[in-house]
Length: 71
Image (tube, rainbow, N blue to C red; front, top):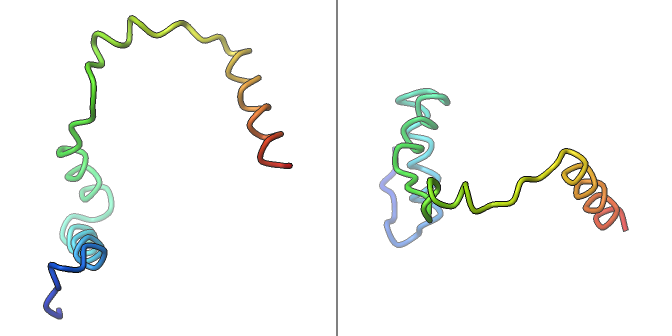
């Protein structure tokens, strides 16, 4: 494998993904990457602060977004 330029972040990231996939397989590479995704916020606290959303509201939102993107 060619030497990777650490100044080129895209090349470094792409090669890193390829190496992980080769070493662990697709599922293993994804599992490995998920271990380092810390996320943001406080899910335990915030999940109780969000309003309940009904299926009808979700469907209406999807339909509205589809109308916007179709235009």
